[in-house]
Image 1 (cartoon, rainbow, N blue to C red):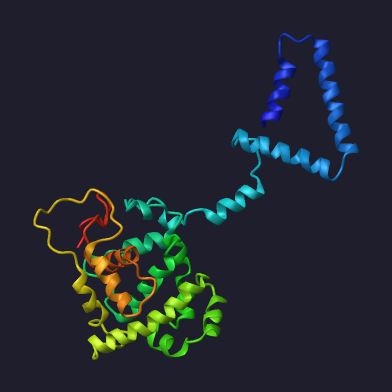
Image 2: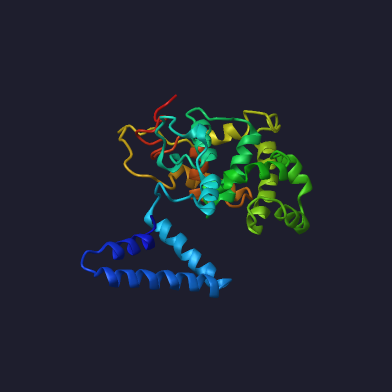
Length: 290
């Protein structure tokens, strides 16, 4: 029963009202409703219907109430995937919402793997570009655009990007795809592809291939956190470290863009390079998991 219907029923059944007066009030209300329906059409009728729908929504679901089409569409579009409901796993708070299955899968399979999820140059370059694109956005937004990035960037072939994407026209062409539409970030990705190639060629000339595993991964080993003899348990989330400061400065000297210390701290954590600070939180099913 809607709130409006409930009010009418209460007025009719009120013991303090004379029977004759109640009948008159009811008759007048009935005639008024009929007159409204027969004399007012179009917008007036639509307003009356909308008010009743709003009253029903505010009242809550009842046995008599029929499901509203709008509510059904919203629930279908934004509801969690059945396969992720009730899996019994407790995750880090940023990945604990089953409405974001891509975020949960990334957390469960890739993020902060103790030995690194993937050591290939291609994967580490992909992660570098995505972390830069994420600045100012949610990681879930970037993950939903990940396949678009892979298509637009030729599966993150840094050789191809460095030799093909060189002009403002290339920048504009990439902005027509479904990646993050930010000119500076797109321009930075082209610059970073060239800098990535040059770094590998200079430091690891025999490990410049997309699937080589001892190129950029070995470069990152120099930015692990130093051993802490006190072995204190960190008590707060950090957003940068001495190592991320150093990595940021070193990459900037080599021409990389969008590699600030905060971005590099997130990058090192994501790649599995141990940093000081909380990684998988206490209670997460991946906490201290090897």
